[in-house]
Image (cartoon, rainbow, N blue to C red):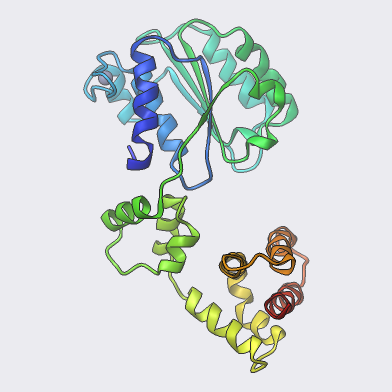
Length: 295
Ligand SMILES: [Zn+2]
């Protein structure tokens, strides 16, 4: 278990031991926090036949099946785009059948906010009248997109965010090279996302970004030049822009900086459109950034 999630896990484990766990949990937290792993370990504990307080034993039949990812009473729904109604119906059929092993059945729905409206409606009845010993573990980083009828039938589990120190301590056990502190601050509450960023090739660093911005502010380069140089790294450039706006705002929050942050969020969406002129969109954002600084 990730160190920042240990206490939340212990809390829920105790309730499993006392048979006081709500049958449906909505596990919330930003992406890169470890929600999937948290839900999976909770499922493994629920299914273990020889629980040792807050731990699955690791050697009973259930645990062995789980470590091979072949437990017949654990069903996981995940989707990159949308969770369709057929996926939910199939899962409900399995939940309504009898359990193969210990009697407990678990359904994990990852990124539950991607359920379509009909998927969510198909799930409602199961949430309202759960079969005995059945647990539903929903995870999401966008709880605002989940239907109120679903939310009201789940117990909310908001996972705590790690401090920067906790994140850095964990990253140091996973990653041997030196860590850019700007990058660490940008991802401080999302350790797994930070690790993924670190493991990616770091060709476009915050240092390169901020040197470019300094040059732009001094009039030594143009927004369009930077946009064209950086368009291959557009995603990172947008992250750095938001980070930059936040850094500026630490001293004094100005409307212009806030708007810059909002604009960066908008550009993230614009760039998902394959027909968009990247250089043009990025140029306009960089121009706004330069104006925010002088405002
Ligand atoms: Zn076990």
